Picture 1: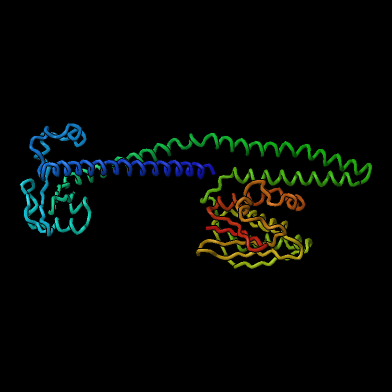
Picture 2 (picture 1 turned 30 degrees about the vertical axis):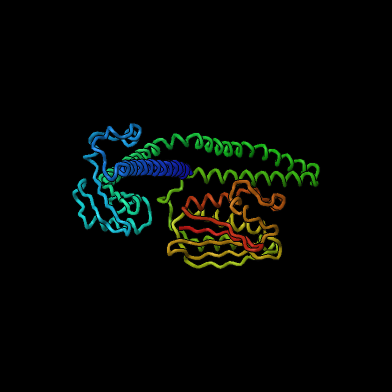
Length: 410
């Protein structure tokens, strides 16, 4: 349980970190992209205001504009662009390629036609950013080469991703190293609870034994009465509760490890446990329907499997009405695994929201019914602990008034 809690903490912490890093990466790269596009559009607008040419004397430009676009004396010589002028029939009649070397006249005209066909005043084509400007009856199209900016953006994305990946794994190592310290208060509290249950259980056994012995003496001297019988019943009930608590505490304390498991014949274990409950079922006017596939074997702890089957069958008999049938089925699952199911009819079926809570310690969907049947709300939590220790799954399913507990063991 401690290991599972620790890894759950690590998973939660790293999931939160991954989400934050993804949001930050997206925000930073998105902001950088839009700032870059804004600067490029600003340069295009500056070219447009000077009749298709970037002014050689950049200091003549508006000071605020220079600051926003981060213009320098080198900007006119660094900026690669070309212009295409169209007549009233949208036919190119002038192409200015004096500020770019890698694009020919034919290519420029093709890009101009593509920009017109897009019906957008601004946009991107290939590695160019363009703007379409109406000039009287004709049009001026300005194309600015953004290849360098695109390369810088890709490099920035690669670098930010690399740094983020390194930071993520470095943080993962730190979280793993410090996770034990983070969950230590929970571990200490859990250990104190188990120790309290164990100590209290053993301490309570002595006074209960004394009470039982004193009642026996009273019955020898004064005879049996409804009062002494009531005391015996309550002492037996308390002893049963203490026994289940100690069993649960002992089972949680045991470090069941896969290397300690042995090949167990679950078919034989289930059949023996089911047959042992036949007298109880007959006494309560109930029937057991047993369907067990032979030779279902798994690697497990034998005593734990016996406890698991016993808990499920006992629970089904306690909470089913008279003249009903408890069904016990065992089949192989995924070649090497096993599927055990126990179902019974419910007098007061739990609702869907209560199904998962049935496995909580001390939880009882119908406390009054549980008290009449002698239940304490421990059995199913014990069954869940056994299944989890074997890396399996246990679920509860309700159809009409019939509840089925299904265990899948690998």
